[in-house]
Amino acid sequence: MKKIIIVAALLIYIIASCKSPKQNVPTQAGVYKLEKQMASGGGKDTVYARKQMKIYTDNYFMYGAFAPDSSVGFGVGSYKLDSVNKIVEHNIYSSRLLDSTGTFNLQVTKTANGYTQVIPDILRVRNVSYKMTEDYTKLPPADTSALDGLWKMSEFYTVAGKDTVKQIPTQYKIFQSGHFMFVHRYPVNKEQTKFKNGFGYGTFSLKDDILSEEEEMSSHAQLLNKKFAIKITFNGNDEYSQVITDSTGKSIEIYKRLK
Image (spheres, rainbow, N blue to C red):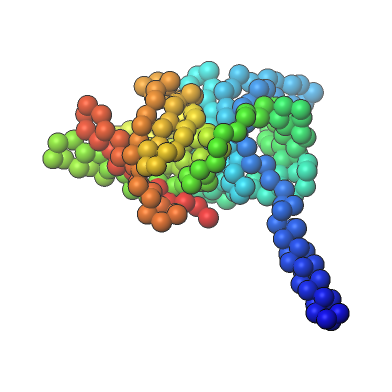
């Protein structure tokens, strides 16, 4: 009996030891709004007027922003929180690097309302090194959903009458705790030699097969402050399709989850 008790105690200890590291894995998961962005170098600080949102899941991040001149910048990637004050981000796709490899080392300081991140040596001009400092406020989370995570559009069709046209944008979409964001780069001419960047951010809820979205920030004026009720269909846990219908026809989008 004594031997059985000892074996049982050892098993409990081993199981607890296996679980505890997973529970303590650091994460930056959340939704953040940029409050201030400042570049420093050569003894000078420059503050930029920039509207930007950033969303982290447990493994991925996405940010989307536009400047006063309406130019759009965005980034999508994976990340690792090495410690409480260091994040390493790896580019998957961005408005500047596209799908080129890029790694950014962020110094992070938690604040009462969010966090501050610093990217040392983000740029070097004429032997002057510049760093970027950004202050973020964390927004309150809502419920989790089966959509939470990072998705990439795999197919996109527009249907008008009997005509079906396959579109070729590059688009990513992220969902986290009641918030969503999409970023994309799409052709603006038939020859597909000219492209534009775009993004949208807002809140969402998922009930049964209806995805309800409200656009709160977007580079597309026609989407701003609009509400959408979108029928979606899951194909397993890692693929879903959605159909949006309006007066001109309908669009069909298929997304696959990044693991």
